[in-house]
Image (tube, rainbow, N blue to C red; front, side):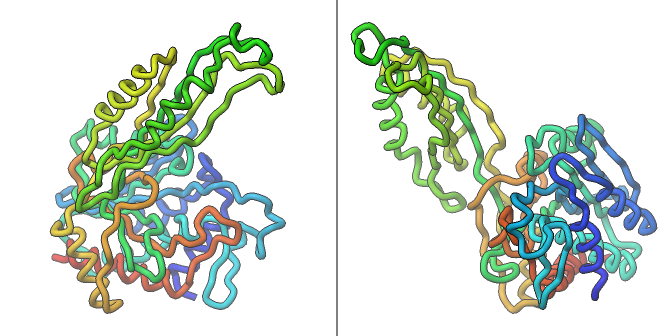
Length: 377
């Protein structure tokens, strides 16, 4: 069994459900310290964060990831206990195998090998690890980035270990993400007896034409990097539970996943204009989870990864901006080139989450070769 697999098992066997780290970051720090990494433990609220850096010069190449995992769901539904890191054939089972403790193990072994072979490498190698990526994400990576920015410490290249591969290892890497803007809309009405609608004002009826219009809008057509902006309603709640009462209000939650064709302000203005057009009495609270970002294909980071993949696997990865968000959204605005490269994402957050052992050994080599392509002296 390789060192990568041993480390991955050690991390996966810790039940570090968000926002709990439960000692995962200590394992990482203890591994990196003998490699001359300076270790900083940055705790904000209940969230543990690790910033480790070897060297002080630029360019700074950072591995970014998270030690927290989502809940397992019913453990009895798992083929193997979710924190056993059980290996059967080529597959390792467990919560966090794909998302994303295994990637962290690959980071560690690739870094150790690179430092051994290139002790006087140029630039710096860093780790930005949090225990709050799967949760609210308010005391994790974003706070570490704020700390780094306050002392003018810059990341030039950032590789996030999120599971980006689709059908085979490194067939796809994320070189950007859409922005995420959520709305919490409350439409006011007048509660009353359902048999006397003339004495009430039904907010569900009133908002329905506006919702139809919002759903039908073609917000944009996307561009060469992004698909069209998407508007989706996630929840509608109204009524008292009784069948004979017209509700006094209705609460609607919705989300935009938006491209660089829009700003949060332009989307907000459009939504308010539609709601106002329908003469609704409402309140609307907005939450911006992240702005869209893109790392250009011609940048040094993507070129280094593509070169490594071509040499090792025989093909170059496709570039994608699809899917959800990641902590890369907090790092990219600082000017860093950011990509996501990790194992297959088919089982993430599912019962029997699993990852290929051979893929992890290959991924370690890809990370190592990327370091060589960027920082070898």
